[in-house]
Image 1 (spheres, one colour):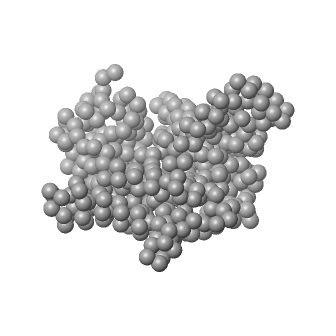
Image 2 (tube, one colour):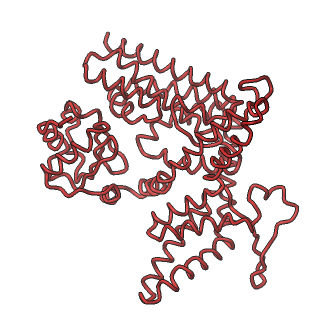
Image 3 (tube, one colour):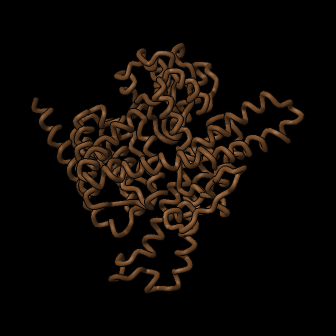
Length: 467
C-alpha cells in the first residue's frame, strides 16, 4: 500500500516541522522522534491525520503510532522530505537522553538493560506454561498430571522444562551481557562475568539456606564464601558496571599493542575478586531485604498491595517506570520461585483492551471506532500502547475505568496468592505462565477485568454524553 505524501507532510508539520526534529527512527509500529522542543507539537492536528493512530511521549522520545507494515514506508518518505539522516534506535535514545532528569536516566538505564533480554525471559515463561500443563496435577485428571496418565510424555516434558529453565539458571549471564554492553564495555566479557557468578564450583544460591557448611576461600587470611548468585539481579548489575568502567579505564592507560593481552584479564580478575569479596555479599543482602519487604507487604495486606499495584501499573507505563519492576520480578522469581506482580501486569493489559473495546461502541467517528477495535485485540495479546495512548488516554474516563478494573482484579488475585514462575506474554494468553493451581483464581481476575472496565466505560461514556 502506498503512503499519501500529504499525510506525511502533515505529520512533519504537526511535530513542529523538520527544524524541530533532532533525530528520527522507527520500530515495528511507531515513529520515534528526538525533538528539540516538544511544546511545539500540535497533538490535536497530529491525531486528526488518517495515518496516525495515537501519540505519546516517554523517556525523552516523542512517539507516533502508525501501524505495522506502514510505519517503515512513512519513515522512508519522511526521510526523503526532510533530508534528516536515518538514525538507529540507540542514536535516538542518546539524543532523547539529553532531556531526562537523573531519575528518568536511572529508569532508562534499567530499561536499556532488561528490555533486550525480555525475549529470552518471555520465551522461558511460555515454555514453562507448556511444562505446567503437562506436569500439573488435576488439570485434565483428578489429582494426576498428564504425564502420570501418559508416561510417554514424561521425557518430552523434562526436555521442555530444561529449555525453559535455562534462561533463569544462567540469568546473570544474560544480564551481564546486556548490562556491560549498556555501560560501554565488551558484552562478551559481561557474559563471562555473569556465568562466573553461577559457576558449578560455587555453592548454589538456592541451596544456601539448607547448607550445613558454607565453603570458603582463604585469600591471604581473608575468609571469602564460595557462594553462587543464581537468580540474583543486583550482584551482576553492579559487577557489570565495575567491569565496564574498569575496562574503559584500562584501555585509556594501556598501549594498543598490549591491550589484547592485558585489558580483559586484568578487568575480569579485579572485578571477580571485588565481586566475591564485596559486591556479591553486600548486594545479596540488599536483594534479600528488598524481596522480604515486597513479600512482607503482600503477606500483611495482600488486598491493599494488589489494589495499589494493579491500579498503578498502567500509569507507571506512561512514565516508563514500569521497567524498574522487571528487576523486582526477576529477583522474586530467583529468590522465592515465583512472582505475584507479573500476573497483575497481564490483567492490566486485558483491562486496557476491554476499555478500548467499550469505546468502540461509544464512538461515532469511524476512524476511532476502527482504532478502538484493533487496539483492543492488540492489548488482549499483550501490547497495550495503541489502546492506552491511541484511545483510553484520549478519553480519560476509559483509562480510569481500566485502572479501576485492574486494581480490583489485582486485589483479588493477590488475596488468593496467585503467582507465575516466570514473566510471560501478557493479556489473554497470560494464564499459560501462571502456576496451574492458581488458574481458577486467575480466571476470576480475568473475568473482573473483562467486565468491570467494559461496564464502567459504557456508563461513564453515557453520563458524559448526557452532560
